[in-house]
Image 1 (tube, helix red, strand yellow):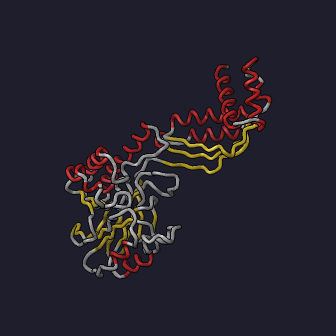
Image 2 (spheres, helix red, strand yellow):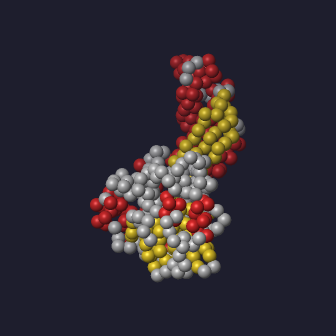
Image 3 (cartoon, helix red, strand yellow):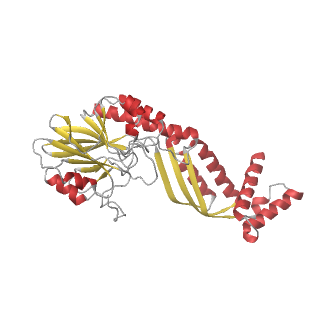
Length: 376
């Protein structure tokens, strides 16, 4: 029997355009913290080794600090770790794994899978890794490698690979897609006993054998990920394969496709939802707002979003399909006269469609309403 920790897609050094500097640093630190958490899980679950199935780093151009922090975190992992180069960090002439910083500071128990030669990890167990040597392979590397293997009976063999399975990809013309049929044939012929995959950021079982898995990324990176923030404890014995998912990640990316705002009650409902979000410093939201609001209610909405952006990691709002309709009641208590009153009327006419820049005019009016509300 063997038990190991299956993870991948750490993408250390990843940046997000919507993060401020302080938030970006928290995000980066969480990814290093995830390595340490994976080490604690490996110890708790009695894993014999860990495989990282590609995209350890965001690219081969990450800075020295990122590499050094990664290796410091890896020092704390108490089991052997096998790193597979993926499409983000291929093993080419510019590889981060060949950099002086990596080579000089790499702990002895951390190994880079450099070719497809079987690696004996513990007695009766070997890894066959399939590193990416370029960013765009022109063939199915898994089928190519497993096709050359002989069936094996006295050794358990874990295949460590990176890439998208053909049954999960919308791009059927990609020559690098991994054939599910070929992978299942390799399993049924005892050429391999488990296929550990990286590239897909969501925890995913592939096929019906229970022996082909994506562990996903241990820390969420985007809204499209269905089950990110996990790793897999995988056990192979005489009875087959069992897997145990473990939650690692702390960050959340939440997208709401349609938030309908038409009344004050709608805004209050949104306010309560936002207030009930947990761990706001590690939560990113994207809201697509639809509906129709008066200028005063739109100002309330803007005030709400202004506040929530101060406490969340990031908040993106799309209001293209939100109609703002100025009403007479919006202007009753502004208290403007003379030039200021004329400016308000001009902006109002722009918003109502008889002038240029209705969106800029709407935002200007909304700011006026918010500021005068604060003065009152």
